Amino acid sequence: MLRTVEKIGGTSIADTEVIVENVLIGNRQDKELYNRIFVVSAYSGMTNLLLEHKKSGAPGVFSLFAGAGNKWVWTEALSSVAVAMEAKNAEIFAGTPERDIADTFIRERIEEVRNCLIDLHRLCAYGQFRLDENLATVKEVLSSLGEAHSAFNTALLLRQRGVRATFVDLTGWRDGRSLTLEERMEDALEGIDLSQELPIVTGYASCPEGLVRQFGRGYTEVTFARLAAMVGADEAIIHKEFHLSSADPKLVGPDKVRKIGSTNFDVADQLSNMGMEAVHPKAAKTLRQSGIRLRVKNTFDSLDEGTVISVDYIPDAPRADIVTGMKGIFALEVFDQDMVGEKGYDASVLDALTRHSIRIVSKCSNANTITHYVDCSRKALKRATADIESALKGAKVSVSRVAIVSVIGADIDVPGITARALGALHNAGIPLAGLQQVSRKTDIQAVIAEDDFDAAIRALHRALVEDEVCPGVQERRLLPAA
Image (tube, rainbow, N blue to C red):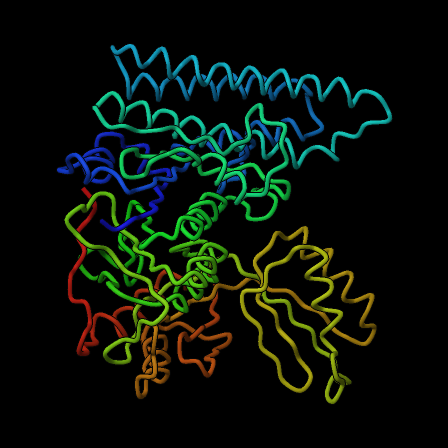
């Protein structure tokens, strides 16, 4: 049997019956249930409550703890998390003894975290200790609660249904050892017979560098990829709530998008750059370097084989696979008449962007102008702009809000594709602020006004995907998830 390491996303793991029926058990019996390792995310919405809301920025426990307002308001937020987690336990285990086991597990963890944070507050009341020096660790500890909750519950649920499931806790709870990520994984899996046991692993793992500090909210996929590499998995699988398809079905219509079917890690990187993560770029790097293929499956479409991402995939014919993009991008333009001929002129710009942790999405330049398209907050950009103006006295720096739409494929070297993209945007009445295509022929990026974003996606998808029929194109139309 193939050995797989599989990651279940937050939305998928939250739908208990579907995940059991379509992923964890289904029609499998006896040996078919094993030789798999599952890495689980926190239930949908839990990490938002623990840290802060990923999209709206609404404060969670961590934001309230770190804030300068009422220093005890975070305790109320933590109590609300406990209520939400116990409500999830009731949904899964209602009327069974397992509910009390699940409630006891999470209550103990939450109360220990509460006591720890109270002690930290008291300690920092003395001048010799600073709260800001410990906030990164607090964020790690709070993050671990979400994955510990979902992994413990999933293992408990499987044992309730006769599967020999094992809760594998990588969070470092009550473990004073300083282990690397690989050391912690090896230690946790030691003694587990994969042919007879089904490990359910926390997506958060404790390590000296801090997973959240290094990888942000994508840490679960990093754990998943590193674990797949460590055990030499034949295949890594991610279960999401959607297919990896040619565009957002909500935007262009579920009857118009196509499942990708097969692609390579080059395309996965381009998607990550546009904020449409098939897999976290650091996780993709680990899998690519280990030669492990990645399969992205729709949890709600169990009969479909999903999309396989591999190192050596080459399409049968050049084509555009995906149309996607990002709103809320800033164009940071540096103009200097004296720039031409100056070697390394943009070093100061790059230094400023790096210093303020600003992510560069794309970049273009000519003789006297360098434009970086960046994804960041206005506050960070304002500080970086001030640094650039201070370092480059003769430069004129301007900032504008834009959007980027991108046409992506493993090989988009289709004759006339750039002209067709331009024509599609022109016919839709969408003016261009910029256009870029690199020599690798994997993507075309168009810079447009934010208000034109949705229309641009629809126009490009219609012209380059819906109206294009090439040999080997995956013709399967996607229906809305059940």
